[in-house]
Structures are given as structure tokens and as C-alpha cells.
Image (tube, rainbow, N blue to C red; front, side, top):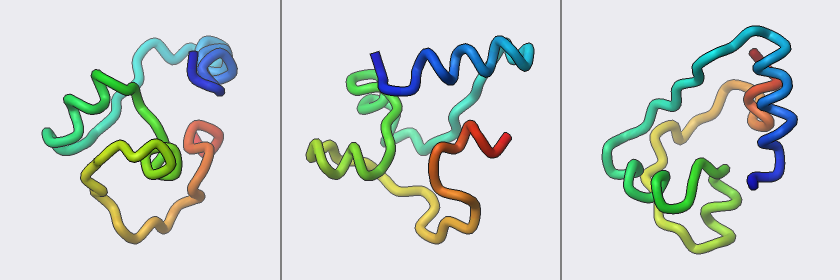
Length: 68
């Protein structure tokens, strides 16, 4: 289980969220299926290659789900 999975799931249920979507480039899909969604830091620490899609982050970085 991912570190924040239950906390995110509980918050989504509390808000009545039934679906979540993640947008990425096709080149990241195989890795997501193999390793799950992870932060850039986690991917870099684990040596998992990925294609960065937004090099200049202007929003609060982490955790994204708290911003919604």
C-alpha cells in the first residue's frame, strides 16, 4: 500500500468523489502500471525512469490532493 492511500481514499469518500483521473504522456503508462503513481522524488530515489511533463511547477507541490 502506498503511504497516503487510506488517507486519500477517506478524504475522497468524505467529499463524495467517485473517480480520479491522472493525465500523463503515453511513455509513462507502462511504468505507472508496473510501479503505481509516485512522486518525482520517489521515482528518482528508486531509479525509475519517467518523462517529466511540467518542468515549472507553479502550484503547491505536495500533497496535491490537499489543494483540491
